[in-house]
Image (spheres, rainbow, N blue to C red):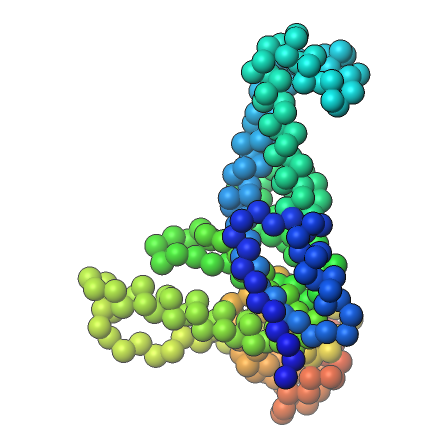
Length: 288
């Protein structure tokens, strides 16, 4: 049996100093899965607060003063205190401290450009932060995906669960479990007292075939060739975790093979290692 490692990090955990201590030890010749609870929204709130304090300081001219700019880092607080007051010096020290902490947690300063982008909506900023964080975790793991977790009463994610593995087929199990949890949660909401379907037996939810087919087409269209299993992981991964099961995607691929959208297999059975390619029909398809 492959050893597994499951971890839940709720407090700030830095990729360089904390995770490396764990994951570097199992880098070589080990099959490991790990789970991390990533509080991306809380991270972004702190990042936005730090940014707003820094902007207020900049508006006073303190951060543009040549005496402050040219000072050594250790002397900067002294010059800020002397020229702009103790409050400015304290605020600058705090922003530097929090920026360093956030960079350490994220494993890089990429978060700064995300929080500073005024053209991107807040929820998309959180999602982009998760995307970048996943890429950092690929330092240790071949496959890293993240599931957005919601409360019953909100359409906004509370947090994300990052799943990491060096054994790619394990993702099918994680994604299938994610689908089960999300679908059961939706049914529980529908069955609550006072709702239209309260007390009724509702059939287990499945993804609509046309919805899955569209997702497969979108993924396959720009590719030249891709193994069946790798195409499935592409379709179920990224921001689609928990939307389609591996079985639903396999059935969709079969349908598209038989109807001439894909080529490379007969469509009568799942052929995991066969290379699938989009046909001319799919290449000319316009997604509407």
